[in-house]
Amino acid sequence: MKSKISWIVKTAVLSAISAILYMFVKFPLPIIFPAFLDIQISNLPAIIAGFLLGPGSGIMVIVIKTLLKIAMIGTSTSYVGELADLIIGVAVVLTASLIYKKNHSKKGAVLALSLSSLIWVVVAILINWLILIPFYIKFFFNGNVQGLISMCAMIPNINESNYLILYLLVGVLPFNALLSIICNVVTFLVYKRTHFMFIEIEEKTLKDSKSHNMLVVGISLILLNVLLIIGVASSSKWPQVWYEWIGLFLILLLGLVLTIIDLVIFIKRKKTTK
Image (tube, rainbow, N blue to C red; front, side):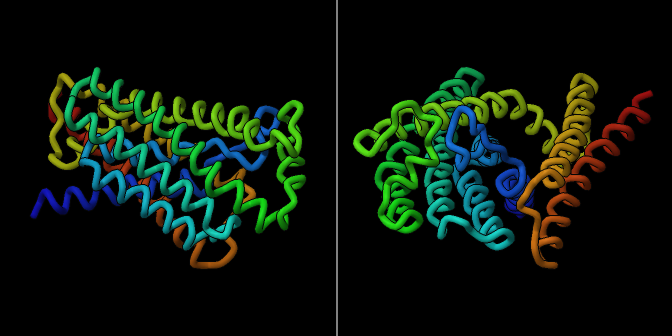
């Protein structure tokens, strides 16, 4: 029973972090890529969940963050964009977590994240080719490809005869490669610290040899919450109704509470060891 509750709580925490990253902490690179492609790392908590708790937890994080986004913010893509993100997220998390489960080591993590980046790019290209591009052209541009072409004007020599291949190869491929590399590199750097954080919070014990990990995690969590708040404050997609504000407040509050718990445990342990 204890292990099941622990699994649920950790999955919920990582889902909350993933959801707020998905909803608010994102930005475009319009000079390099089309403006509707946003840089965001909401898959990071899901991959950590997959490493820490197994593929089922990672998939739950992906599903929950998508549902929270739809419930709180809605959709500007008739749910097709969210569906694409869901498919990519599940494919990436499954790849990474299953490989890491078979090879539970630093080399296994590198292999898992490397292959998940490849899967990320391949699935993104297939989804854009088979689902997103046809949908957007038909429903957002009334079947006129010039609408999409005008939004991809930063791609050299794009026209009606080559827009599909150029968008996939010059837009989708490098964008998702960059996105997956950023996400997976950060995952590799923070996974172990996140793992230690959950262990210390759950067992309420701290070994002297690992005390520095708790301090680093505590400071990192504070910085993360500050960044999340800044991301929300600078976002153009503020909640519009009262229940959206409540949901946002609860997500931010959860992160702050975890930070406080983390630092309190560290301080108490340090006092008892003096």
